[in-house]
Image (cartoon, rainbow over all chains, first blue to last red; front, top):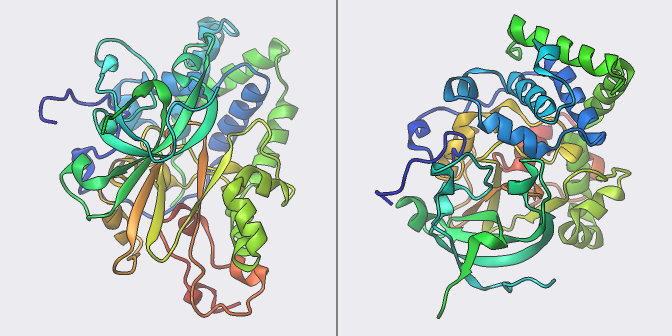
Length: 96
Length: 97
Length: 200
């Protein structure tokens, strides 16, 4: 598929840039920030205030340097805040 | 509503790349676009994530498990190795013959 | 190796967000703490026990493969409000490997938090294209003649592997069998090995 446009940066399946990148088998434990972000996410989801789908869209919308540079839970947090602002549940002033 | 595609049906994934024109939330990975696969089974109807992501009404669509051979997708890989991907009905077209 | 600490800006963002939500009466700190506590309890032990039972009980095995969500209920685990669970049956001729190339979808209710490596760019990029190379990172080689099927979790299901029961486990109890199974075996980057449980 030589003429196909490059995929969006989050659509990573088979991306040749990483074909020689090691998958490191370590699994460090989540820190307190991580767990708090995760818990907040679930509470908001269970209250019907965010959906996983909205959150994914916001993460995919991060510029590549943030998508690949921020930690997993930093991205979840930014995405959650963005969804809540999009929905008018909090304002951008509330989180600045 | 019953599934459009039966188990064993040969399908082609639409070759569209609408995400190059506008920001969308798609769950059809680029590597299966335009590829042919076999339906393993229908997985049930689920609200369309493409709509849920924008917090708008999301009609339910039938989801399928579709099997692809590795080699045609990547031009590499072990013969017999496969990919199994969840794909929504509106991304699939029947293949004749 | 410790998880990377957040930047100061993100710590501030989290506290401002929670502050705004609590002051608007939308949620409480107690709810967050309770959810944190509850989520910490989920672990791969649940998936391991389910597989161990499937290895020893053919009727349960059939139920697990037909409906993973209902099978989890038998272990007192409710998936209500969570995505359905699908279970992928390995055979001597077929080995499954689970990935989410688009994000990090993972059967959290039965396996706990997704491992760091599962969420990594390298895993998400390579698993669908070079599954044998990815397995080699864990020193895993499937037997000659075994095909690999990579399962990309692109939509509503969450997937767990039901590996082939290893040789040398005849007469083992469910508890003993469960010790052979961790996240690696239930995602498919490793095969359950008897040597792992020599201390048992």
